[in-house]
Image 1 (tube, rainbow, N blue to C red):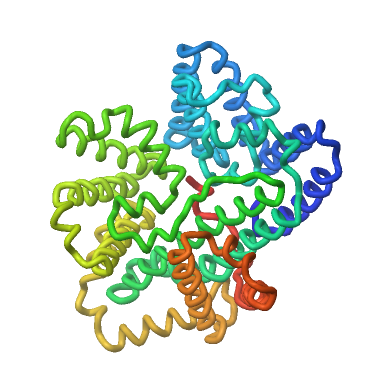
Image 2 (image 1 turned 90 degrees about the vertical axis):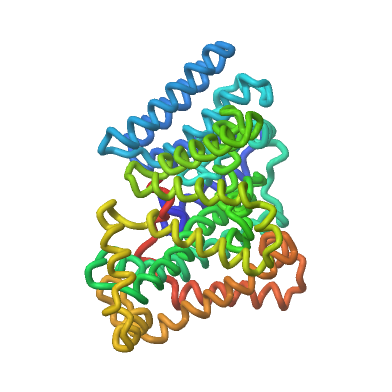
Length: 454
């Protein structure tokens, strides 16, 4: 069930009505039914795997440290098996296994209370807005919310904030991510036919597509959860405004980067055992991040590159701190974009083709530049009639995104938190602008979220 599909809208309306009017003592059961139905809708095989993980984690958490350690090993084994050795990949498994591992680790270290109620525990792991692509919630943050449902009510304030989160998330997904995907897929799936400018533009577009796709999902998840009174972790804080790779990972996929820090980097020793050991720990952490994302060498290279970038930053931190912040931001964007190329390429062998064609002189001629600009303007999806207006409008969407990002950086808040504090004229203008863009230039044919595959 995809957030931008009508089936989810129908599920959401039915669940909202059921949750709003049910007695408080039955709310947790309604929530559980909704979570289980959402999970089952993804496929009965995925449902069985998810339920198995939940039950194994729940029961093993009773057996003190030994049970928790066994539970962690089982979760790791299940994740590795389905990611590397099975043709079937259960929906959301990367996210809920990491949630279970975090829970078991926190119970062991006593930073999270052991949850004895299996209904509450199941609602924590399988909470439908975060099930498929996170955020990876910690027990200390989210378990108290699902155990105190009497305080989780559908209020007008929550509806307002939640609606704006969802609206902006849908806008980013349909109007920017899906529309940029048209050109990105066309280039990356046919590397032999493109080069130079086309490949550069495709890499730039992919970096924006990935951000809008994933942060769009997160915005919708946060918004849907907020409508019911739940507060999920912010997963993005304008990562392309970062002035270093370290800063980028404090703003990109925050729940994963903090998970890797707390459960991989710090247990390995962090920065407590000298510089060499610290750099080795950074390398191991980022390689595991690459392995978590996918089972090909491309993802390992992507993780390795980020490790190398961060190690270099640590070595030359004094010299780097003297560089102008705007220049540091541009350098960071370039390095992140460079690494995204490996992240997006379909096969390891495509690396050679991509960079061979990228630096080919034949592809940098005036005629090639004209061809690339034509392809961007008139790129189509599923043999739709080319429309220059539809494709020019994506730049309008990018302009809106840029303006919103600047406001968010200045206010240090999500646009949804900012817009509800404005007067009615500004709020209505913003809402109608996004709705108009969604229904006039949104691409509804490609609604799958990228991180659902991870």
